[in-house]
Length: 93
Image 1: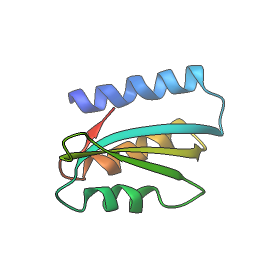
Image 2: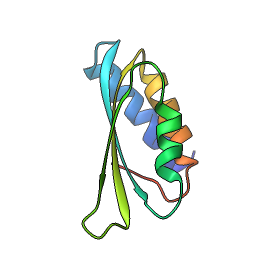
Image 3: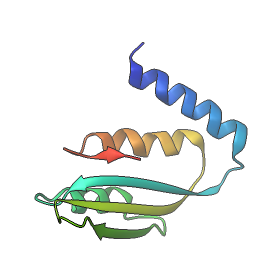
Image 4: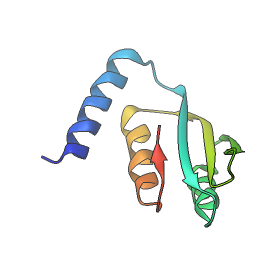
């Protein structure tokens, strides 16, 4: 089992233990500002009433992206993390 798989198994157990679904969930990412990664993140979450906030870093090299969205299950939360991982240069917080 990979380190990522192990991380997601632990995350799912923690979410199911501490969260009542559906719930408002906060995703936070940092992406480089020199490409279209911000748009890719927005496109990924642009559904279901997601509230997306962006803020450029002091140097302008990165953009912080915060997404508040209602999630139905721990599996749905993890699915979004896995889709976001495919975006080049993204860092999940």
